[in-house]
Image 1 (cartoon, rainbow, N blue to C red):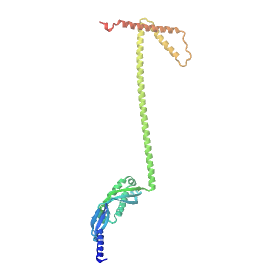
Image 2 (image 1 turned 90 degrees about the horizontal axis):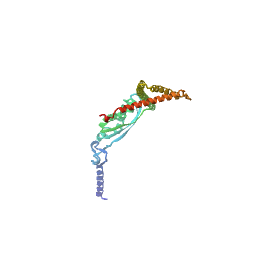
Image 3 (image 1 turned 135 degrees about the vertical axis):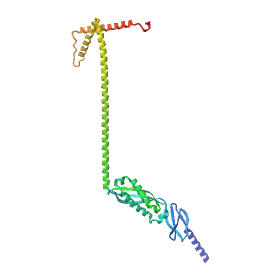
Image 4 (image 1 turned 120 degrees about the vertical axis):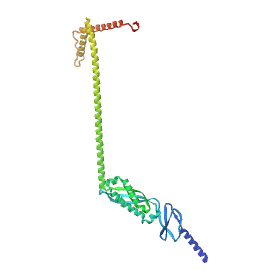
Length: 319
């Protein structure tokens, strides 16, 4: 091979090597920093970029996508001296690749240790009951503190979530007994409230029943009084009618009263529950006479009523 051809081949190979070393392909979601003799000069975004070979080189390859960091479990002492095991997850995103590359060494390790210390600070300032019941508050306080601390590093902390909070076994058992006692207390209170409401409703029902019963007795008394009043009025009219008949010399009126009393007494005698035998008195014929007297008195009343109606002319013939 001639020296000229050999040199041309070497030159072509060097040109290809220089070309490939000058072209840089940056994947989506990443930024590359460019350093000139170790000094940062510019940042390469996603796509194909050019650098000067031998003079420039790629410094740091920064992931610009949101990243999840697992915070390891640690033991934390609360304000009331209870020991709690807790761990967390932190969601971060690089917003300034230059600061993230050159302001802190080992970014993920720095954020992990920062999160660990702040978890101890926040949880240690709260009582055990607050820690177990205010997880959202703990997350918000951690997010505020850690995000402010990582801002100079060009990192945005988007979320911090406490993954697990586990008190010791003896405290868990005590909490279970407390919860059971609280639930039993609530059940007894609800039972007592139910008994109270039941007693109140029963008393109200009894009250209404007694009121209705009293009103029924009052109404019955009014009706009985009204019946007695009407019976008295009827008796008074009958007495007046009989008295008028006696005044006119009609002895049947006297027989009417005597027969009425006789019949009533005989009725009571016949309807007595303990009597097996009814004895008819020897003067039974007097009962017949009494009945005849009552019939005669009734016929006389009918005749008097008929004469009264005949004496009054019809309404159409009064003129």
